[in-house]
Figure 1 (cartoon, helix red, strand yellow):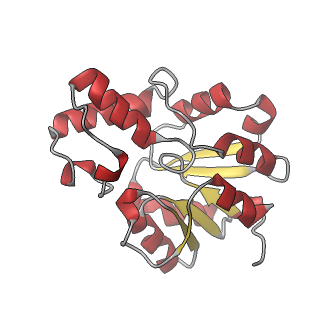
Figure 2: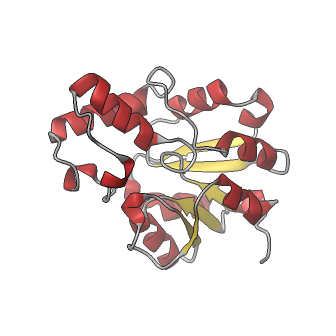
Length: 190
């Protein structure tokens, strides 16, 4: 398989770089008493469709994660920091997130990574899930890794090669190439 140069590959943030599901499950229990949620229970990207939770609570938990990723203890996906640091030695790495603001992502990156790597990561916050292809194309990315199957369908329609980061909420919702972890991503690039 031909290796993908890091300058041509983009990444989603939540669910790919950051373990947002772990934070959601932990905060739902600690702050609201929803303590029986397991990762495999999250079978839909919009968790209110698969979990018996008050939508107001779902929104409150995600808002905390989005606005204050460092203080809520958002963790990186296993291997993400090491591989991203390796990739940034070759090129600027681009993260395109549906988050509304880039600053919480930048602060979080600085809390988990070496400063030299952070300086070689571009964070694009677009504020919506359904406009990623335009942003991915704007930054000259040819391939993009995302955990949201619907986004990957939009990417392929726009002529961008999607790669799905396997999560319970995207299983059975696509026929695209997938990666299971950051070791798989490393193998694509290095």
